Image (tube, rainbow over all chains, first blue to last red; front, side):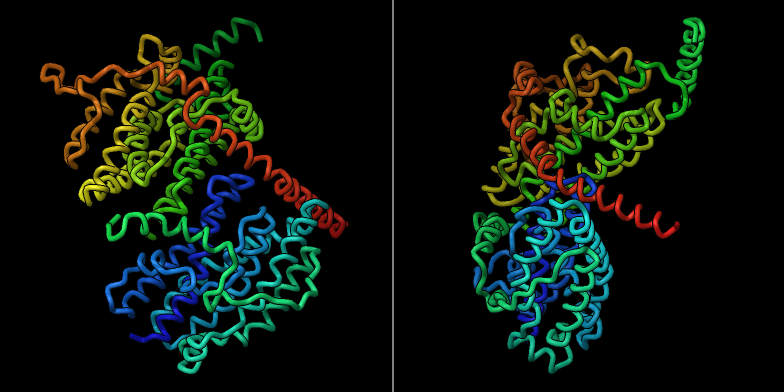
Length: 250
Length: 318
């Protein structure tokens, strides 16, 4: 098995998996019917992406593990998503802030992944980028609406960005698998995305009349499987059926 | 307008419906027609929105990625149905906010079936198979109803509902052909959803208050009892096919009628749930009202932002 490639794919896909799960929690509980539909739609896109990635990972693993085994039967320490995407839906500003901070990264990442020498990854990126450019438009539009809306919404949006900011730097950290894949021209060198990311985020936040947080204290660990306390609860929902009724088909 | 003129308009109006012409939003219509349609269409829209909750309950716990994606898509379809049914109802001169208000204060009803809990994964199958199955039987005739915007909305709704019904039945097939535990889960879901699904087609004809007028306006083509019989005759063979048992000891094929005879429906339970005392009435309302209240600052922000944008645009124009 191509260990590095396998881990690399999981690193990408777990972000979509966990964020998709978070967005799915909101279905039926959104602030309006239109936002409800949009959030469900984002969740749907993300899970669609997850399936493409994990089906590919399943092929590479060559040990009979299915896409569902990979998605739902790993232990908490084996999930490789960034801490940002597992943060809870504290309120709609947090949901939008989390989505926005991830989307700006995700879009830039996929633009590079399209150039991968791995044709499957490049094809998946090519399909996903259309969806993610819509996600980025949706989330940045909402950051602007909330930031430049009422006093209350501005405060809430600022609070969410301040709280989530600490998880942004991790997006640009490299794991061993990342580094190996960059050398083989399969993976994206995320360190190269950092500068533009913060410029783009700052530009959009300025338009939203939201201040860019000054804090330089960052949290990381998700990519190495060291998560926040939130992830365990999310996984107990995600894995519930597979754990309770093992080895069955649905 | 004189009484005679109104009478004339009414005669012409009824003649148009009799000729199968569609009534459009700007056409003259009797006040009772407008009110009846607002009531039925908004109730339908509310049912779609409240109906998202019992199924939304399983999105985070769906057993496989494929099922999760299908369930998300299904619940999203329901939100979409709600959206265009609300829009179609707005053409009758009522706003979506007013309709929400009626839902949240309990003045408007929604389908009682959504006041039952979804406690296992098999409930996702049973809802698709039985609840959507019963809904289709109710709704297909509405594709030809007299009010244009409603009829057109229903054509799309029915297409998607029939897909949902097949999807639900497919979940049941998989469970029924699975391990003993899965089969038991499927049978248990059928046991719990069967009778509420029969009730969903409405009270028996002798107590149904709206039927005669609704028939005339093509809001209804068949009576509740006929629809119920149709649903039973269609569903029993589907249960047989996958080896599940309908939980009715009195269910028996009647050769003479060419239909199934079935047992007594517990109408006390039906009225209990309709009157707000079902297993989840309070939870469903709490979820809807809670989402609405928590979302208020978001909706206010969107309005304020749109106004600011407009102002800036006007300033630039000056």
